[in-house]
Image 1 (cartoon, rainbow, N blue to C red):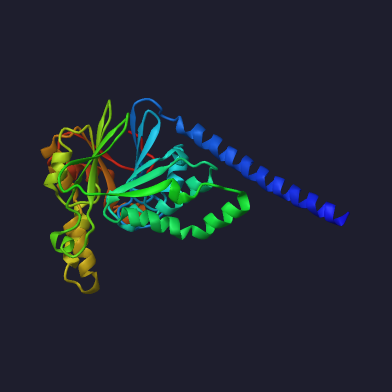
Image 2: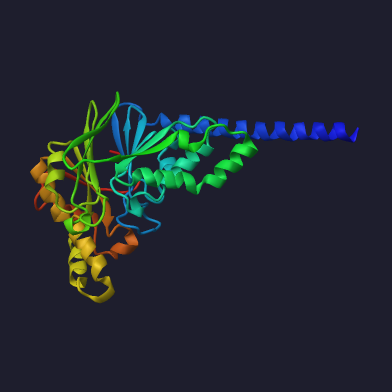
Length: 338
């Protein structure tokens, strides 16, 4: 009798476990597929994170944007806060299958492990995802999968999962010293080129690079500068683009950092920021030379309201760009749609 009851009890527990998994997965999938329908026609740019640098605050998430093409999301960068920002924007992160990383700094990549693990956990049959980026992105994805090895093994044993993350998620290292087509499907063509974020003295000592991307769809062209100083290759990539999403550091911040170059422990950081990022005036020059239609300022330094201290306003950002560029200028904010 006891043996029979024990066997029945085990069967009930197995059935309950299976039912909970199926119900939770179905609920997740239903919510995610429902979210995907927002903005289903044409091409829409969604700014998910507009903070410049690895600065965690309550005003802005770190670098991330989405290009929605007929409802399908393409992700550009994946800094801290991206996963939550996707949910807030009503974009189904389970449907994100192509991710384009500009460079491997943490403020552009920190949420890759979270995004991939939640895609896997959220469905018994997760959609595949490829992370594109400069040299090192493949190893980064492999490292993210390894980080969740215990989670994977626990859930496969306990929940009866059969799909391993490494069979559906992968990274692809790109090389684009000149403008190169790196992706194409029936909705979009993506081109990339190296920008000027890493100085030559650094590139001589490491294999890592930084990329800008251009998305061409049936109705729009959108260019993402990534982090960069003034860049002739970026200007060529952005030629006649409808939208130029470019990082921006206000001139007061740049001048303050320039004064810190040579000042003790802050020297190397200040030099990096001054030499490898674009001021608002740099943005204006590049936009004018490329003859783009609209500039969207992104990766803002300073970014959060607390950092600005009242000295940097949207109007001051715009005025600085307009010294050189006469087209439309938009100061980015999280969840802005264009």
